[in-house]
Length: 483
Image (tube, rainbow, N blue to C red; front, top):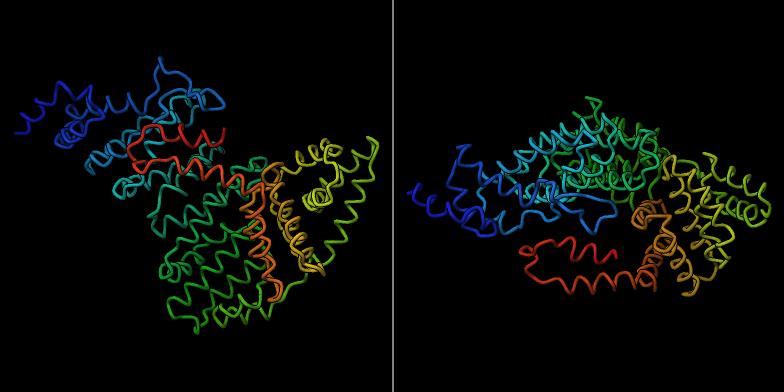
């Protein structure tokens, strides 16, 4: 019966790859390489491999050859688990392993192939089959300092891989955090953002029971110590919140353990931090008591005066010699007021055109290292400005919100989600906490951001319900939105 079925489909199989019967007949083949080969070759030719007749993908900013459309979801749904694993294994061995580390062969890794592999990873059977190989691939890419590949893997692990065991999750944390700690990654802000999002995603998806049981072992093995650095205060704080949650969920909040206080001391040495009183009240008692016994100094107490001084230095610089001195002043490693001064210029409606060249040189120097310190200084400055203001009128709050949104959208010098994360993690006294939410409310309702959301909403409304059956969704909607 099998031979009869295959023979009846033999004539049509190479020309009907969109027909579900193509995949049903493939499912019946089994492990025979000769019988699998025609199906695999046809699939790779249409959706994955580059060819000499390929034309550049039109929506890319540079020439990327090969298919731009991934394997349709309806075709993936028609495949058996065995066939899905075969396709993923073939793509990894024939395309990724052979072409990913040779710059002259990067064009062989087509957009359609990457998208097809990403879609395959959404299936649990493929994900578990390829996970260890992806882990080894990550280690190789990081050792070779190939950040384009690291960015690609960070996106895959963030958005396409969801069932990662605790042990592998810890190894991914260790591997990707090494990129953030390396000075070689500076100057790649998009990579930094992608990896930071991945690390936060990996931490937040820890199972509470596994976290409670596994963290002591990971600390003893010194694996976690390499994850947290002086540049990752927000990641450190999110991980501490997850530990506190694991104590509460497992009913162990009343049982202090030595490893936890030792870990808190280790993190405090890296990045001094504090929590608001309302956050401490929800923490396990022994953790809250530890933080109350270890207060920190307020390093931002004179932030407003520092910003005012630097603002005067900038606005009073007229000659080229003064401009060079200003660039040198703001580019110093211990000066993190540049974004605050830019915000103050925006709020006071000063003509930014006069300072474009100066800020261009400053930001070019700042990109040579991490911007985390500048983000934290900006967050503290915003909080102190809006909380120390005597008259919190709607006009005042809207003006601040509009200025922050303009820095993120029109001038593109900050990332809004990153700033909001830092704002919500700052330790605030109870009466001042609502101001962060009020500022967030006005930011959402600002005219600039509202227009962006409205444009995206209009495109989203035009997307049909049967999105999984569409071809080239990325080019039709995602790229159309960015145009």
